[in-house]
Length: 138
Image (cartoon, rainbow, N blue to C red; front, side, top):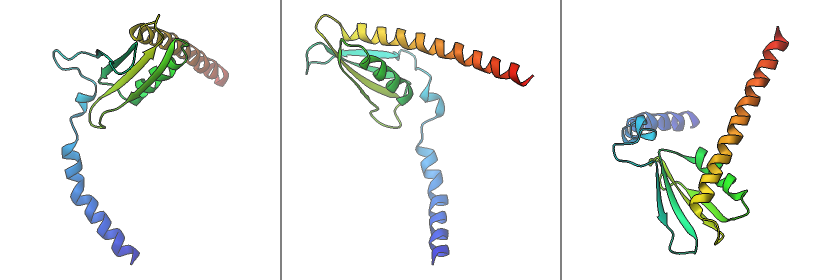
């Protein structure tokens, strides 16, 4: 019984594999901006005060989660969250609400600047660790 089910299931997968592959967008669409397409689009959030919605094109959870976490470290940020509208769309929507004396755009710029500094430090320490490990092997 198990073998028949397994064969039927494998047959189903092999028939439908080409269907799934054909619906996937070309991989270059995940990182190349089209002519006239902006990397970041800002719009005012009218539902809550001092908030904005940023759409970041050609990025995914990796950057979205890093920026959100960095924003939440800022005491002037009241809310920071992101979502991916659809798995086949290569963009995420970031919503930021800040205190009245601090703009969402400032918060985003500061978060990105801090992330760049943290990642540069991480890269430097990583290279040092690799160098130490290689010297230890010699």
